Every structure is written in C-alpha cells, then in structure tokens.
Image (tube, rainbow, N blue to C red; front, side):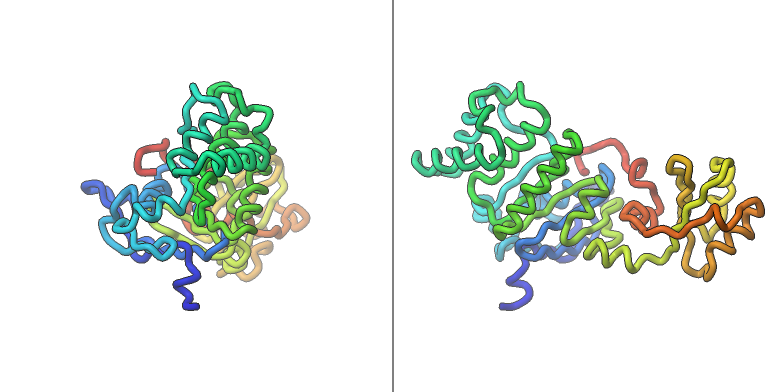
Length: 321
C-alpha cells in the first residue's frame, strides 16, 4: 500500500482568496487514516474555510485535495455519503425532538426503516440520549445538544469526520466525555479532523497543526513539537511581577512573559546558555531560589510559533474563520 493510499486527507498547496483577502495560504495537510488531527488557532485564522474546501463546500483558489481517495471538489457528491460534518454552532432543528432529528438525518442518507430504527437506537444509547428521545432539541442543555449533533454526524457510519470547534459551548466535564467518544470512533477506524482553540484538546490529538492568519506555523505530533521548541521555559516567583514582566518583555531574548497567579512564566531563546544566570543579570533583585525551569506547554509552543497569546490572538468570529 502506498503512503498516499493510507491518507484520509491529502491536501497540497491549497489557498483561498476572497477578493484581496487570502483566508488560507499554500496549506499542506495530510491526515492518516484512523487518526485524530487537530487544527489549533484563534477565530478568523482560516480553520473553517479549510474545512469547507476539504468537504467540497468551497472551491480552493489554488491547490489539490484528495479525501478518501476522491478528488475534491470534482467528486464532492460521492464524498458526502462517506463523511460526517459537525458545525461550530448547533444546526439541527429546535422544533423537532431528539429522535425526530436523528430520523430526519437518516432519511437524508436513505436508510431503510429497519436500518434507521437500529441505527437510531444504537446512537441514542452510545451518546446517552435515551432519556431525551422525545425532548425538543431547543430544550436540551449544551452538552446534550453536542451529543445529539455528534450522533447525527455519525448516522451514516462516516469514514471521515469533520468537527468545527465542537466543544466551544460546553463545560469541561462534557468536553472530556466528548473526547472519550472521539477516541472510541478513532479506535473503530474513523479519521477525524477537529478544529479547536483549547490547548488541552489539542494535546489529545495524534497530530496537530497550529494555524495563524491562513498559514500553518507548525505541525506534527504534539510531544515532538514541544521537544523541538527553541526556547527555555522558566517561572519566577517575586513580589513585583507586573514590573518584572514589563522589564523582561522589552528584551529581544524573551519571546514571552506572562503572569500565572503568583508566578511569571518566561520564554527565553536557547541562544542563552544559562537562562537562570542571565535572568539574575537582568534583574539584580532576583535570587536563584525564585527561578525554576519547567516543562513547555502547548500554549508556550503557540506563543513561540505565532508570537501571540492564544487567548487574545483572535479577532471575533467571522465568515472566513
């Protein structure tokens, strides 16, 4: 089997322009079959536009796309019966019950009455929706809506799932449960492309791409990406953290300085051989006991490759997100 035949998605050099705006620029993306591939980035960076191109909903300005061995957008109609797509905002029918929403999607895919009943019963059990079977979708909680949307996206046993910021409106426990369900699907062979701006979710992915302003700034296995970072990460405990942050942020060797409670987390380029001594030279009031080396996080990686903090890097959500 050739390497390309093991790819669920193989996108080469794809770009998308809207007039003078280039929402996605020369993007390369390869997703292995059965893997969960994460797109990490702020709103407006091009994640949703990329998904629309990969599913054939939007034609790229440049580049080539193959999904499940099909050329996209030319064979988009054949692709649609083999994929599932969960949008960022809940897009099912509020005035239908849970079961009615599932039945409606099953009818779209042409399931027979017997197959429809079996599949709906299975999905309601898998995603813990049996108690809500006759409840209107409008009255569901955020977590219940999320589970219903995932169940509907899986009604056709998709080989490839596209999930566009699926956990943006749910609490941490529901997010954790949702990811356990994704790993069950991955274990069964389903390939998953999921966009997120949550660092803990990105860390769960088999592969990860960090996207900014239409460009992929880094991609690979999360732990391998952390191992290749060109910074030392230190934390400082002191009384004057705000003043210290302002002082250190002016230095070219400091990629980032961010306060975390009673600590200041500082990213220093690896050209500094002894960052602890270097910090003491910059700030004479610091003692070595106030400085500690810590492991890098995905948030540190994001800052390193984009130069921005993930929580304030994005513009408000827009149509080219």
